[in-house]
Image 1 (cartoon, rainbow over the protein chains, first blue to last red):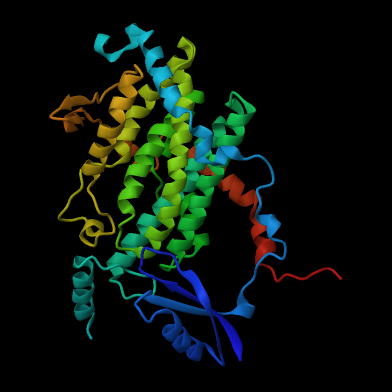
Image 2 (image 1 turned 90 degrees about the horizontal axis):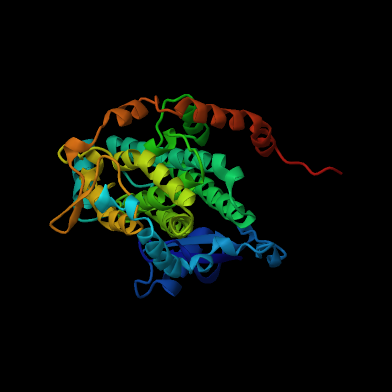
Length: 103
Length: 305
């Protein structure tokens, strides 16, 4: 017997998501078991089974941490656009010769 | 079942809003069309990294340099996602790359133009990424499902790039006269290419990608959404548009067809834009210098004893 990890997808727009495991002698049987276990109520329109031994992961998941301060990769770093926007609008008024109504 | 029967079934599936996976039957023209479209998108992401890379040394602060480098990395990452999706349609990544370098395939018009200064970074990050986001968001409902799944990731990163670009824009706009001039100068040079970005009016009868819902909206429709969304934002910052000047009419910001000079776009489409050869040469140079990395990865891996 082998352990199979089961992935299902609710529709073409979604990615496959892990939903559980089954134990079966081969992939065909694993698919049948997975169908009965995980899609009895149309939770998925697509189903995959993958041998657990074919799945690879980091031994040390702290490797997934971001190594240094990279806050600029996140939207929160730019939250001040709202205040900046009103500052910029006010600044624009200081340059009337450049405003489009005068050109 | 004959090819004609399969084609009729495919058309009916699409008309009902059905999606297509790489392993499904698809007409040859669908496969070719989708491949060419995604390949061009992938080419544009990787070529699009170059103009911004050229601006990196001009970053005013270390933080701006790091955030711009992170954005460039995202763009290259988008190319990787897209080339992978395109590969499943039957063309190898190597031949896509070689066709790009040989000038046999295309990349977006805006990446054929020079960058002069930090004002260009503001325009690229805000208005060009804004234009790209309008077109990409419209593709989230494309009939080719593997494309829509990677676009989800791409769009969420583009959303961040937009913030980043607007942030740079607002810093310039609220700064000194010299800083405001940087943005105005860049806007004056980029406005026409941005209008071109969406392409000429779609030929709805002839465009197979529209027929098969690979594309969901016409070029002019997307351009209109962009104009309505961004023109007021630029105007309220006190900047001026060059030709084609958008005019407000019945609740929309309109650019008249006859005001658009299409000649520069025609040149770019033939790979004769102002920076086309130099950028392709830069890409070719990187491709050659990194050949050893591809060779190492392709070779059977053995651990030293």
